[in-house]
Image (cartoon, rainbow, N blue to C red):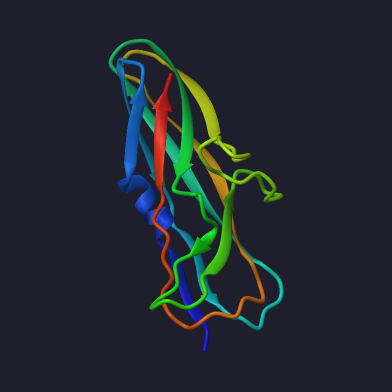
Length: 157
């Protein structure tokens, strides 16, 4: 039986937002599209690769130059929690299409998403970034719903 898997991280990313940094004359938000791995089949040997989009949107009340960093917290592990005990599913979220630079908080070899924008008074601007998910193949796991709920932070500078 296949394992049905929707990684709640992507839908939870926007809801679990933390803002930190210097005072700005701009209002900034971050949103994410779902990172959905779908049904996992343990008999598949290769990885399952998916993408999601992270979008930062800022609206300025006056002219503003904003730098920001988008970090993924809660990435001290790389496995989805198993239902009712059992083995967890190994996965990763990366900032590059080659899936070599793991997305995290910038510590322990992880990378963050970094950007900037210049806004005129009353201007609203968005910048989007692709993140890349990979679910390792050939894992012996139980059927069920697996969960992972990280938090992303948008640090303004």
